[in-house]
Length: 145
Image (tube, rainbow, N blue to C red):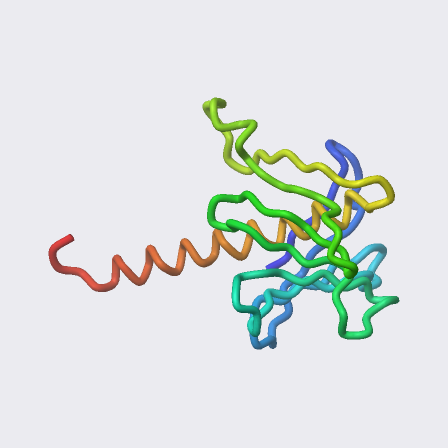
């Protein structure tokens, strides 16, 4: 899987690519062909979460961690020190007719919004894939509904 990042109507400014070999969901974010960060689904957490690592600062301790209701697309992002640095959700757009892939994102001062958006894209892609797999599994069972 590869997602392209563009400013509306503009040139390619980066990409998000799924790692082929990983224990859990794992994506690398590239800018000008260089890996600048990694996003991974946490497999050892008591509650579902995602970890964000800047490549230059990757000491095994994530720069950001996302937790919340991923299936409802409503979650918070926390820094290493535990402070909340961003929130992502859909509730402001619930009344819109076509709200697919429409979110509100709030970032604290000093937080790179592109990093938070990349994290949101990976979470969205991962949960869409989970939903597709669940639907295919259900359909393959056959029989009565």
